[in-house]
Amino acid sequence: MVGASSLQPRLLSSFVGDRLLLSKQPHPRPFLYKPGNKHVSMQLSRTLSGLTNLLFNRRNLDEVPDAQRQRLRPGKLSPHRPVPDHIPRPPYVNSRQPPEIAGGPEVHGEKGIECMRSSGKLAAQVLRYAGTLVKPGIKTDEIDQAVHQMIIDNGAYPSPLGYGGFPKSVCTSVNECICHGIPDSRALEDGDIINIDVTVYLNGYHGDTSATFFCGDVDDKARKLVQVTEECLYKAISICAPGVEYKKIGKTIHDHADKYRYGVVRHFVGHGVGRVFHADPVVLHFSTRPDFELSSLSSHFTYYVV
Image (cartoon, rainbow, N blue to C red; front, side, top):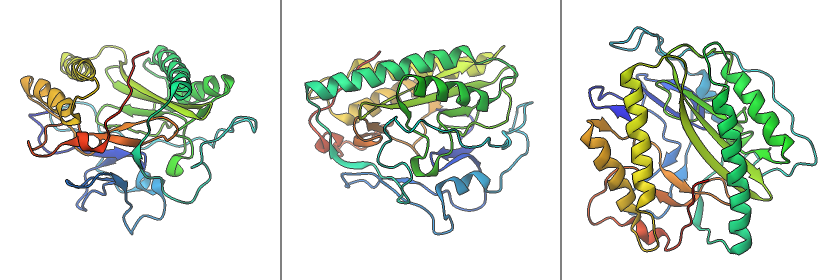
């Protein structure tokens, strides 16, 4: 979410790059959604030969308007972290093909749900541990190293690593970075907020979770943003049940954000997870026109909170 007082988007980020700031060129939209289509697909600009090339695009490094801190600057990336050979890899690792959101819903049986709970539980444990590391001075790359080690120590694979060329094992999105930030040599500063997005691949299933943490003394404006965002999440979870239309999830989020004059980021969507990292159903986080029903995508879904 972004404050309604800043209507201009300050940044677009995804698994195809980290902290891509405003430029004069149109934003590439890696996850392409068109009303009337059943699926969301990933697309790349012809000018991009690899997903991580967006990381190195020209950036506006001026100070953020009405703020004392500067915009995020790209840090240095550490070498690739190895994963033991005995740990199973997701199919996309080492693939030259850009990943897409899988078409068609995944309806899981009892065994599949059990595997999802195991991977989700591990992801939650790793996320909680990562949150304890947040403090002024720590580098996001150090968080990545700790997360990577904990995941492989538990016999799992860090799902982001190698996903469309993503070079790290966790996503660390600081301040104006919307999501999927790439850990690097930048040290966290007092007053930062950081979203840590952990996904693990265990027993053939992905477990995906994230949370935003405060670094040191965070101002009231940032704290309120995080609070309202969390409220939107749990209000949306509370209405999930068999038969509920997906569009009602987006409306619930949008309506609560509107109360506090926050806008909802529309570049990204919620997604199913299981044997595939990103799968149907596609869930928008904002209100849609009345005649558009996302529920046509799938009639079954599973959610739980660890």
